[in-house]
Amino acid sequence: MDILLTTRQRDFRTRLRELLGGPEMRRALLEGSREHPDDPDPGPAYRVLGRHRWLAPDWPTELGGAGLDTACANILTEELAVHRVPDSAHVNSVRNAGRCLLLCGSARQRERLLPPLARGDLLAAVLYSEPETGSDLAALRTTARPAHHGWELHGTKVHSVKTAHCDLAIVAARTRDHPQPLLGITLFVVDLHAPGVTVRPVSGVNHEPFHHVSLEGVRVGPDDVVGEVDEGWLVITEGLAVERVGMDYTARVRAHLAWLRTRAADRFRSDDVAERLDRLSTAAEAGRLLAWSMAARLADGDLDPAEAAESKWLNSELMREVWELSQELSGPHDLLTAADPGAPEDLTALLLNQEAPGLSLSAGTSEMMLQVIAANLGLEAGDAR
Ligand SMILES: Cc1cc2nc3c(=O)[nH]c(=O)nc-3n(C[C@H](O)[C@H](O)[C@H](O)COP(=O)(O)OP(=O)(O)OC[C@H]3O[C@@H](n4cnc5c(N)ncnc54)[C@H](O)[C@@H]3O)c2cc1C
Image (cartoon, rainbow, N blue to C red; front, side, top):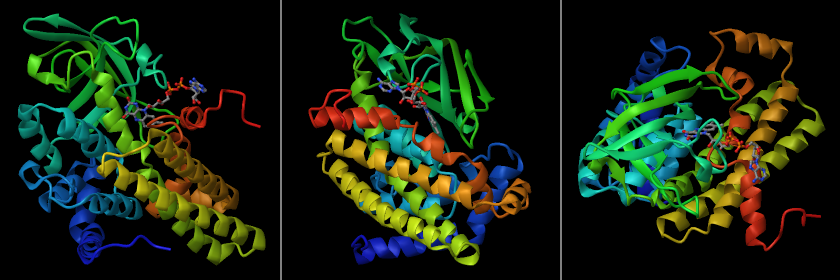
């Protein structure tokens, strides 16, 4: 079964594939990794897409998009995964931060920031998590206090990726102590080159380095508040919704599974492997249909958070299964080849990148997704039998 696309959408996919598989994109990817081999800069590749207005294809043309529909944004996500263009910064910069600004930013913020984000000239990070605050964002400790006709931020943010290549960030900070802790959080646009900001890479479970960002007396103006003061939680929910439809996750599952199938056809002919691959492929198709239907619901303003949680949970857990199978199938030869910097990128990625464990944590962990699903079914913790 496949997704039914219009002629325009199919044409978009064809032209996108030509660009992503072509020499201009290869040069841009090389340029991004030459100077930063440990954490390639996606900027050059995104600027190639931006020149065609395809980095944010579904944004309005006056804001740097191509005015295309949500299906084209889904196609972009799928093709970035297939062509292994680093997409984490795209998720943060365009789909999360960009969406927050598109939906909740002031007219001035939209005019100033969205066109350069759509061109790839600016990259935005999303700085919510803190050393003691991940799943429970209400516990965040970064503060923003009124100062000098604006605000002054103090705190530490962790776990963001590609931040060293970013120019600005959407930062969540507490502006008021409130009996309901999800209230009293405000989102700010912060210039990552401003005095008081320090960005430092740290290694972690992920294939891309995480970053530790310290904010020491960072000044922002009144125009840098995104949405309403103390109501940042509503904006955060808008940004996370797009990640939780599971599109990035299903795209990666299918891209990795396709690679694994080729490899298995060459070298692993057992019925057991074939059966597991068939089962995973069927589940991956179901995951894809779920993600596409959630993306359509999101575009219609009709997304049910519990259904989105199902899609995010299913697709990120599938990714973990694909990864586990690939680990089982790899022999010493694969590991040696993968350790060789000249090895094909997809092999290195699949074996070494640790992408799968990270996916079950980012944008809400699998356990938190199960909690959302269980609550929707009226189950209490411990009810599952
Ligand atoms: C690849 C990747 C990219 C990321 N990118 C960003 C980013 O750009 N910006 C950003 O701000 N953050 C980012 N994060 C951080 C991410 O949002 C957090 O890792 C996530 O929210 C979990 O928070 P934590 O790591 O503090 O774990 P914790 O919240 O401490 O959870 C630890 C474990 O306990 C479980 N747990 C926690 N609470 C409960 C509960 N109530 N019931 C049951 N189980 C529970 C969790 O499921 C998890 O398994 C990223 C993470 C990853 C892996």
